[in-house]
Figure 1 (tube, protein in one colour):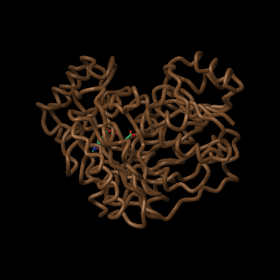
Figure 2 (cartoon, helix red, strand yellow):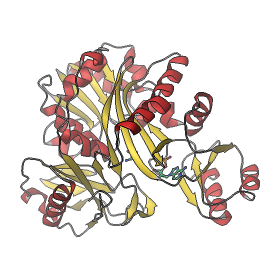
Figure 3 (cartoon, protein in one colour):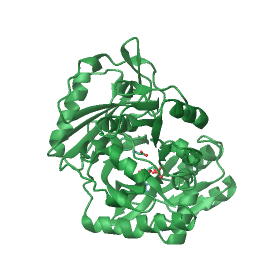
Figure 4 (tube, helix red, strand yellow):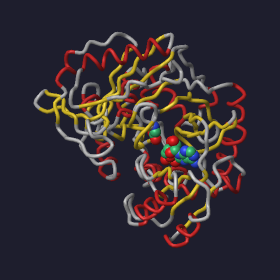
Length: 419
Ligand code: AMP
Ligand code: GLY
């Protein structure tokens, strides 16, 4: 079968790589893909917002199934669009995608269904937010409501910082803001927990721990993710039961009560406080870089798994995992998450030889005149899997040292808590 993948990041390259191994898959098209996907699929330069054009192309090339990587097209309703066509699409519909698209939607849902999350208040204008902020304890967290690509979240240690956050959000720094969310700062350790769902059955799809801050020891600005390891060191059977009973099941029931059902990957971003899970956020897709970290330890055929979901046959499907530990380090352009240079050559990449169990997934890259160019803030994801985290980490650092890309940087302490 021919497959289309929407997106252009490291997540999409890892999905593409895994689908290439699938017995079900003939040809893969990426909309628009990157230099990594170009080596194994055909990159198609159609904007992911242009559903009509993607549809026409899929009909011409006999693409039977579309997999959506990033959240934006999901929030914009790409699944609803394709539901009226002959082409299958894997991902949640527009209503379900509000779980990521609107933080206030999710918080209200948590309140109604008693899902554990940080206490919060919602304000739709600056003055009342500032009034409230004068009488509360710090630190606290201020969030812009809509999609903000991993930004739009401020951890404020005093009123002064909170005031700046409120101003920036209402001035539209993260797109037009109808409201802000002010929530209690939770002290604990984060864990990303994933499920895959076909609308009636869902299954565990691994855990990981992401490092979101740009600096070593988890300091500095928030980014899209600087590296991850999988499985999370916090994972246990007892915690798993709590996450399912207190968070996942009530959420999927809430979605049913709204008259739809959840199909696709669901990313449950958690803060674990004294062994209790609190929901920080939902994402209606796989994580990036968690996806690149997790897929190399998946033993099951990803194409068959996703196709089974599209046919509501997940209950009959067994998902198998390797017993290995995975580490992913993200190589970024110098300056990220602020400004960085574009179209910078990545010289050594052609000379890198990877062993089995080592992977390079491209993110912001393109090929021009047979040269690899960095075009984004996050450029490459280097992943290794082995019997322990220390060894996997050493392998990834060795590859990064061989790449020796002076225009970039990476965090050398990824997975430090588990090593
Ligand atoms: P979000 O976009 O909601 O996932 O927030 C981005 C990051 O901010 C999270 O991954 C956490 O590191 C941090 N964060 C968000 N909400 C809280 C909270 N209530 N308490 C502590 N840290 C938080
Ligand atoms: N790694 C964080 C995210 O995918 O949102």
